[in-house]
Image (cartoon, rainbow, N blue to C red):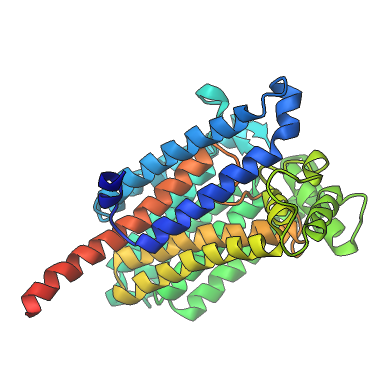
Length: 383
């Protein structure tokens, strides 16, 4: 064990955050899948926990491999991956499988599914980090800097939009943050926001004329309306989540004692944060929030150590995407936001989504590992 720990490079705080989130994940998934186990696995409550444990261990293996690879290699690899992701997103629009309100490709072995948007998020962020690094000398120029950035962002986000509005919005927001950090002109960023708003208005117009063209838009509209109106009957999921959170109190009901897992739809994925607060109380909920904020803080520290560098853009882009998704998931659980269908990274039960999250964190660790190596080499030279 000590030999394995000794081979873990990169930011040790990030490694600790990942381990703690994984512990929360295992405990919460085991507790929240009881009803699922009795329904589909003849009462074998360990089935889903063991499956989730295997997925997490494979995720750790991917994370370990990713952090051992020099982060600059991802620049070229994911540039090709962006084209593959765009093709897969296009295919998914026509022949994708509808599962948990998201379009996915056909099932993979072991009852897993692959969501191309997971690949698209990682590859687009890497592409943007690469372009922003290469264009720093002429970053304010419209044709040579802004156009190469905005075109792939619009293409990927528009391909994701018909099937998954929230994922498209998160990716679009992450792209804006990266552009701001990368010193893209503010008037160009505002123009991009305007294009995003115009695209949504265009989708709404098309939906009004031909609802079958964007069938998911009706779902988005109803969710926002139900959230605004506070319709208790329509917001059944949120009401059950609020009951879970309210009954948790300060210290919670303790692990395995959740009552709302029997009433809350998808307590092991979309609303797993409500189960965590019910069982671990306000204290447990604050700890989970703080873990994600610590992850973001460590990414900001990386940016401060290597500003305007590909690694800095890559680390902050990937981290912001993960933390923003986590905040949206938790915001939905406490009724601050309308239902989105976003999972809680590294905690919600899943398959390929956990592996892509693990790969993303492995890339962040690769950047921090390279920084540590550079700093170790600089110190002897200064002496």
